[in-house]
Amino acid sequence: MESTDTSFQDLHWLLDVIQSTDVGIVVLDRDFNIEIFNRFMQVHGDISPEDAIGINVFSLFPELEKSWFERRINSVFDLGISVYTTWQEREHIFDFKLELPIHHDQKLMYQNSTFIPLRNARDEVERVALVIYDVTDSAINSIKLEQAKDELLLLSRTDRLTNLWNRGYWEERMIDEFLRNKRTKTNAALVMLDIDHFKNINDTYGHQVGDDSIREVSRLIKENSRAIDICGRYGGEEFTVLLPGTDLDGAKYFCERLRKAIEENEVRSGGDTVSFTVSLGICMWDERLSYPTDWLVSADKALYKSKGFGRNQTQVFGES
Image (tube, rainbow, N blue to C red; front, side):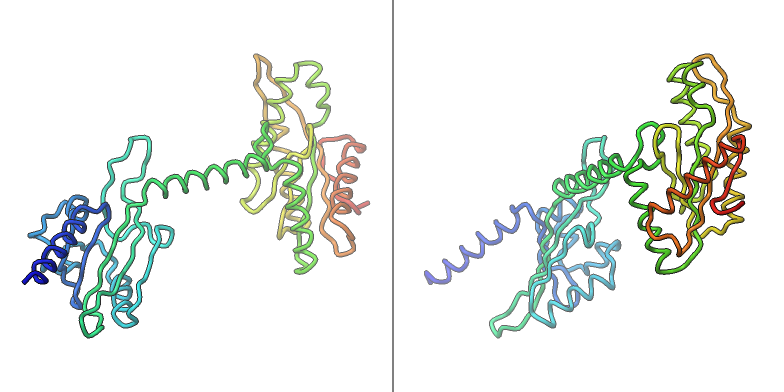
């Protein structure tokens, strides 16, 4: 008799633990009917135990992804081992709403989960316990940390004045493109350009107008480029654009469209209105180029050829 009382007392304590623990606990039979549904599940699901016990889990939670959930449960029944799922794999199993500060847009609880086999006296898996952990705080902190890292990486690669790629990162991309073309033998063009008589703009109107002029050229470069084009500020008033998959006619068309857009544009800054032109140089990728720097130097030579022939034009390296 004493042994029976002890077993009953142990069961009572176990049920108390299941109800009071700060994790969700659901026990399912082979037909996916709910046998245990603790207070965590009741509170976050806004479901009373009377409405849960004996009910099929898919009827109670229609948002469950049935095929995935069935595979998960059946694998525990068949293999007899526990299975763990993190929020990175699946943000949540149950659509439990969150009461978070209004500055955060997350609406549902992030969850880790464990599917545990429950065996009978004959060592057969008779039921599966699903344990749900609320990991929202750590998940949000992890997401914010990754976002901060991404933002810092972007800042380290971006020119502050223009929001184009800075010289260091642009050169990395140029090297990658050069090596890719070595393998694929595809067309690509490297364009260099700078603002004509930029020193006169700075000397006449001041550095603020000069900076605004650089920003405006950057805007027009982005406006006239494709998503795959690699645009950078090389330094001062000089810019670079890599045009992957572009032949010479395409490169000339890009340069002429950009040159006209800048020539027809006006910069309004500090009460002044300034117009200016740009000179451009093109160097097509060629397998005779030995190094990435050869590509860059050749485009720069084409740019200075444009300046020597009167500015406000495009010249191509290697063309007479």
